[in-house]
Length: 323
Ligand SMILES: [Zn+2]
Image (cartoon, rainbow, N blue to C red):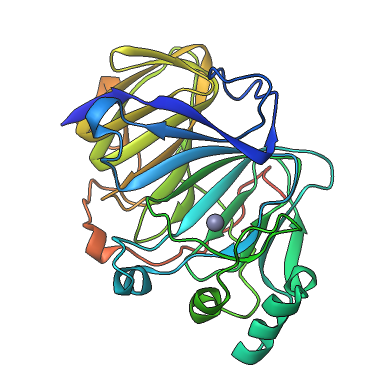
C-alpha cells in the first residue's frame, strides 16, 4: 500500500517551450525549452510503476514513430511494449496530431516511404482541440504536432521506433518500425463515456483505464486504487490524502484508498489506473456513502478479463473528440 506525491521532473527538448503556465509550476532553467514533464514516485520507488504519466509541451512536431506491442518488446529483451493515450489540455488554433496512414500500404511501400521521407505526407493528420482524447495502441504510426499541451499516460517503456524526424537528423529505426507498424488507417473516433456525474471514461484498454473526474466544490470522495493509480490535477485544487494538490500536481496510489476533498472551486483531474475495468469499477466512491457504489454494482474485474477498446456514444457537449 502506498500514497505518494509525485515528483515532477522537467526534461529539456528541442521541440519544447519556455513557458509551462498554467499547467505546471515545476522548476526549470528558464533558458532551456521544456518538452516533457515526467511524474515519478519519490526516492527509490521512482521507476517502480507500470504506468508512466507525462505532460508534453510542443513548439515543433515530434518525430513520426511507432511503438511495439508487449510480445515484440519482450522478444527484444524489453519488459513491455508501449500503448499510450493522450488528453489534449491546450491546442493552438489548427494544432494537429497524426494517427495511422491515409491509406493502407504494403510493407514494401511502407519501407520505401520511410526511406525516402514520403511517410510525412502519408500519415493522417487531424486538428485537435482542448478536451480531445487520442488512443494510440502499440503498432499505431503517430506524431504530435506543434502548439499542443498534452497529458499522456503510457506503459512504462523506452521502445520507440522513429520513422521520420522533420529534419532533426536523429537516428531512424526503419526495419523495426516497419516490422511492428500497422500500415493502414487508424481509428480516430473514440468517444468518452460519461459513467457518473463525476466520472468520464476516456480509454479502457487491457493496459490501463484512463478517466477524467470532476469533483464539485467541497465534495469528498475516495479513489480506490486496486493496483496502481495516477491522479493528475488539471484544474482547481483538492486535499488528496495528506497532500494539498492543485493544477500540475500528481498523486500515485497503489493498493490503497485515496481520500479526496475538492477545494472551493472544485477539481478536475485525470486518473490512469491498472487492475480496474473503467466501466464497472468502484474507482470513485462518495466519502459519505462508502457502502454504496457510484456507478454499476461493485464488480471487481481482473486485468485478464478486461474488455478491449470500448466504443461509446458521444459525451454531450464534448464535440470534436478524436481518437
Ligand atoms: Zn509515442
